[in-house]
Length: 206
Ligand SMILES: [Fe+2]
Ligand SMILES: [Fe+2]
Image (tube, rainbow, N blue to C red; front, side, top):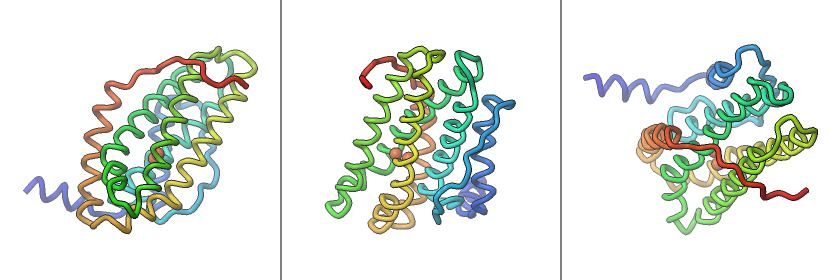
């Protein structure tokens, strides 16, 4: 009976505005005094959706909030450090779980191999950019400039996922796959997040 209740709850759609507010609240819990001005986000019909795509957009909004909050912080402040560590662990765990739950299947289908390859290649670029930022002095004048570069790259990546790659992936998946993948994602993300470490490696020269 309990399983059925969870199943039923899983299938319920959340209003988009509420889904976005809930995701932002998770980011704000890290540093409650820092404003999270994420502004308008490109419209997507997946926000609030009970399947894997809605779950991924929820994380994207949470990450959009973390990115906006970091830009409000200064130097080597405790808030900046806490938010940046949270962002790195979140993004790494999200990307890994996303690859395991969704892209591996999408990659196997010849119709969507390119889409999946594109998304996964950008995960590697983002990972390198995060390690580069982690290796640099947060209090230096160049840090925020480099961080702005990461933010731009990240927003481009998730915007493209929501507008293009999810749309293509949805076409080759059944409603059952889409529900099941959400559960796989949640389980994998939890494990990935517990193991995620902030790596430090300079790789970007300019
Ligand atoms: Fe991604
Ligand atoms: Fe994503």
